[in-house]
Length: 178
Image (cartoon, rainbow, N blue to C red; front, top):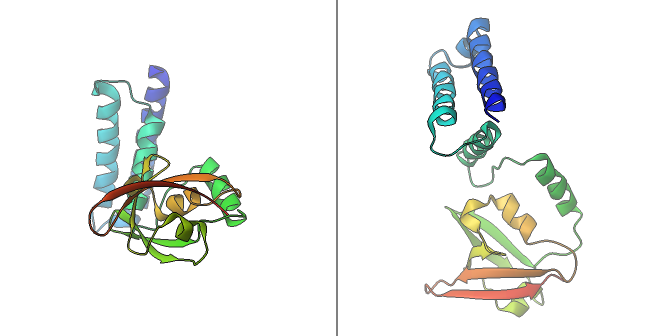
């Protein structure tokens, strides 16, 4: 395990040095100092891998960095793993949805439209409700695409939703996708 961490660390440092040596980092951000941030990133990663109290896998750190980088752009951006890309492609062909439209407002997911005679309407979900959890997972930790994907599925799929109503009360409900 240590050898794989050192390999990834060494590979990261070699990549940074190669970028610096080739002038790529200078072309990318000579004026904004981004090459310094790249070196700093490698140093931080190295320090975490070497000294963090619990063993940490380099790929876990990198995944967190990718997710954070894209989440910093806007609420619609998200890093998707290859498995999540496959799920997303299937989502577009998914036969059932909840009958609501949602948008990310800050770090919360808000219901902005409810289709009449839908599973959402039947469950009592209303425009203005904020989705706090989907099947136990906090929506603030999900991108908008991940949230929408969790709200779709095969007909009859049960979805457990925890809502925050505009008045401030929490409510948990389950409904089936139709």
